[in-house]
Length: 333
Length: 151
Length: 134
Image (tube, rainbow over all chains, first blue to last red; front, side):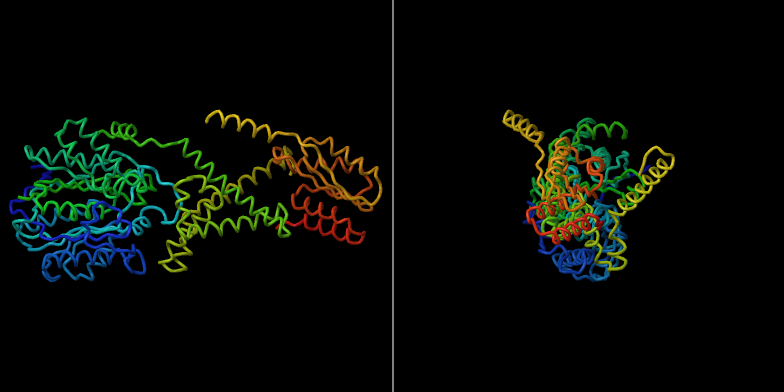
């Protein structure tokens, strides 16, 4: 079958434990009760922002391992990534964790791309426990992609705030009473020739729409409690809903539609269009939503994490912003 | 997905920018900053032997110093978010650009980090400022030689 | 609310455009005639709002303050004014400045009304200050 993008996981690999850690500004989030670690220092006591970023990843991974009742040596593979050049914070954290490691980059969709890849390894039965997830730290990402933190440039209403936070989980064989991965769709790069890096929601919405549409076409008849995108923000969500509405794709989804970025900081205008970053989708998916799945509040949710695959150089060279969206269907019986 | 059609949808659904409010905010912010600069200029002229012509130097230095303090305390970016161009255009905006870049890159050391990256944002201001001054001076020299205008 | 703002805007504009008369103050060694000659020259200038002058032997130090709206052509006005004064007083060494600080300093000298030697020194210092570039 050409370009088969949707896969069903018959072995139902389960997310057996998760851990979420955030920085000081994220205390303003309505999801706060479900964050395991909340730090008062955005650098986590380290000398530089990048060192703090690595520390965040390391501590969150260690907590996920501990909550699962495992040792670091039980982990067959660490699949993780972040937004910084050459994903160095993840590399440095992997050095400390000393597990087999493969770094992955899908921008802000890394939380789900690592989960999908982990699901394949579990499905093949070649691995027992895979640690997956992603993180972001506001200052490091701003330094990487935008302006110095203290620079007084005026941000437009479509701008988003990069979350300081990390979400990681351990995927293992099927366990009753744990949410499991039922199906997943791998994204394709979608580029609608938008060029504004301060309006990534608009650029990512078509990619989210493409993946959602494909996934639903392969899973006809499945009903979802809701679809949650990673970080389209208020602006991008409105565009996605418009695309869904005009295309006639399962219109009932328009009501049961949420976005982690738009909800992350509540209705605070200070954060403009909402939250973004690799940590945004990871902290919300593997924190509050996972907890609600565990409590059997939901039965089936479609997570669609979106990523903008640009670099500061590509933008300066006048390139448009190619985007991607990966989807995972998490179920709880 | 048709790129052109989607771009039109983006423009239709884009959050409306409050242009009038932004212009007013920029006007107020820029005006207040320049007003403060004028007061500082008068202070230098009144208490020290500076003339109108020579007081501009210490005034600019003082304004940049104030911008440095505000940038370091994290206040200048709040003024910038409110005032937009009103805070970016005066010399305090230039100071903020240089100082924020210097703070940001301290982690890479003083020579390569601070020294090498300090003018990351303000560099183009300097380059094109000097270049345009050169061009204007050249044009004026030619015009004077031809006899159209006098020095 | 709108009415209040529109009326106050109009009033502010009118207030800013008022033509204030020349205020001249001077310190003189002797010679009432010379003072009057200078006064008439100044009174004819539309673009100048204030002026001060000190006569000392054959030196004439004048400072003027240009009206705000004409500040763009301050240099031109100063030059043309200097030419006019020089034509009226051909045997005097004329120094004209439109700098605010120089005006303040000259007014101080006028109020002081010091003796000849001090005035000479002060005037020389004033002219040196006006020549400073940095």
